[in-house]
Image (cartoon, rainbow, N blue to C red):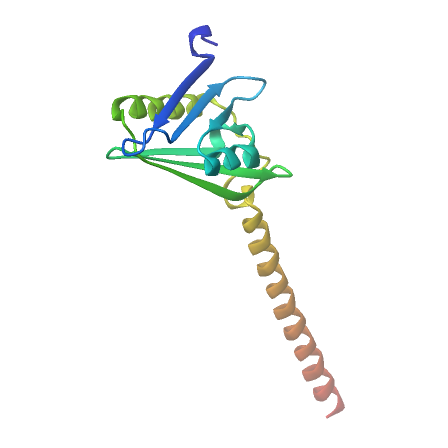
Length: 157
């Protein structure tokens, strides 16, 4: 581990409303996480809801000068819901781009935080698979019962 890269802090400031600020700190523990200390109230609430977030559970985009952050909340090791933070137009797009690049670079070397990959990393994925399996079970039950009735009626003839 490069000691110079252990902690990285970026403060996003809304260009139109400079009093709206969010500070993102990337730090490494046993598992790399991202922690937010955020202002105003909506972002402070987001920080309380999520607490530290694993690097691989966040998406950061800079579109023009607009910074967007998506943080996934995990429950029992699976992604439950995303928290969307739109920082608006930031006052320092170069620093924002450097932050996006730093997150992407660290994500490349960060281990996957979940137990499963793909759709099974989400609670909604398990729900969908459960519904599909239930539908298949109902179909097979209907088909087998229909065959038995048909076999019985043929045996009676």
